[in-house]
Image (cartoon, rainbow, N blue to C red):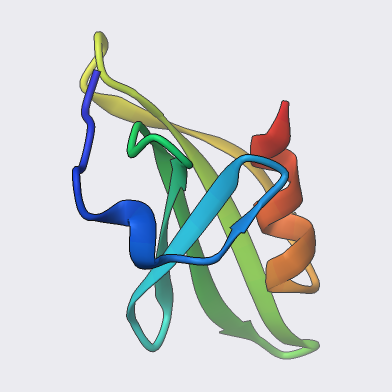
Length: 80
């Protein structure tokens, strides 16, 4: 399990915090610092899309959860 100790400064919603790493990437953690995954923004012909990816530390890979039209919807899928 990957845990970060500096997450306290990030806004927490539904026990999930997000930290914007750069313009198109957010790290998603639990309030205690456990890394859950990432949300990445990419541009399509229809507009911006946000891809949520769950981190699977034992398998050392990411599992795509889905594509969303808003960053809030992409972040909400990490609540479960």
